[in-house]
Image (cartoon, rainbow, N blue to C red; front, side):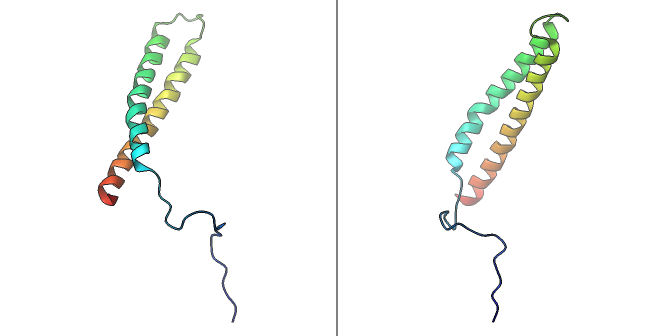
Length: 90
C-alpha cells in the first residue's frame, strides 16, 4: 500500500499547537499605534510647513508620513485581531 506524503512538511522542532503571545502583541500594538499616529501627523504637518526647496524635501517628509501612516494602519489592524482572538481563546 502506498502512503501519501503530507502537504506541508514539518521539521519536527515546532510544537503542534504553536500560538503567538497575544499579551505581547497586545502590548506592542497598544504602545505603537498612538506613536505611529503622532509620527504621521507630525511628518504631515512638517511637510506642509516646509519650504519648497527646504532640507529635508517635502517629498521625503511626505514619504515618511505615508510610511508612518501605513505602520499605524498595520498596528490598528493587529490590535483589532489580537482583541478578537483574546476574546475567543482566553
